[in-house]
Length: 257
Length: 257
Image (tube, rainbow over all chains, first blue to last red; front, side):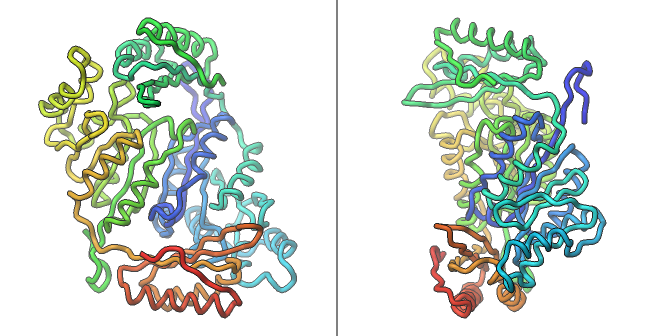
């Protein structure tokens, strides 16, 4: 957990590692990153980096070790099913230098889930959990995710990923929430860029992002202001409204969090 | 360009770097990665890794240098607009150790695009291009992307990103295309996992991915087979049909490329 300048805000960081050839080939459009990003922001955890890597052992191990050293939490998705291309659990065990074997509680959950005689060797692979890891519930299809150290390993199927995120988030320590306001106006980005830059210099503690859009043939700009300090955020957002009005626009807000 | 075992397939690799706080905060769902992944696969270029990083100079510079050393091409999206948070061009110049300034041809394009008097200092920032880079056309809003070395720098707005990809792809050298067939069957993944694993061992040169789905309450599995060798691919896909039929299923294919 890093302390921000002045020791005021508690910052908790995270990375996401999406594991799967299907995302990189364009076959599947990842949905988990966007979901997790929103949930982490709500929980006061800042997603600082996301990576997509293929089902290649060395690549996964290297990415896990790099990310878990750099951020407070690492969330992985994908590669924990019953088939030969599901190698995430083995990669995590190797990254942590621990053994891996069928874990009794994980096996019990699979036995309870499948009809008698249906828990074959391939399905039993889903009970292989790295030593010292704790299980993450899977209310959809029983096969659990797991947590080891600061790494949380979850399924790639969005419905299961989302259920696992819901079950682990309350167990994590969040930091100060990054509050945000978004001021939108039918003014082109290039027209507001200079006063916005000046405002950013005046409020270095409020992060300001500018996002252009073209709707119905008209250029508009969304300014996203983010800060852990409600007063500074509101002051900067108020100034942003003034800037847009001075440019002849009528600013609105579509989200105040 | 890496040669595959046996010297048969020419493999050309790429990475994507998505630059922008808005993706990591969950405000915006990235659309460019999925689009690029599909186009690269068609062009015989293999997307090996994708990263999302925030608008932080050191982070962007480090990622660019790591990825451009590791892959044949690096595609970036985002951060080339007119506002203070658009720092991609400066980061690329720093990564390559070259200067950056307003480039005459880029300036000419902006002058031709804007009404007289509208090309203010902020908009002129979009003509700042690292030394030795060549321009990538922007048919939507004029402000160009650029290529320097093996790095292609493009806008984050999807409409502009897609136009830029269309204009640069024909200029790149692709490798042998990874052909694919997808065999789908209403058989649960756990039932097909063992014969699939055996088939993978028999065809180590055909990449096999397994993707479970639940449609209308019924479990189905998609097996994606990929190879640069048409004959080997077809042989493996034929065997996959047999495996599903032996399990009592009726396999279909939804894409033969």
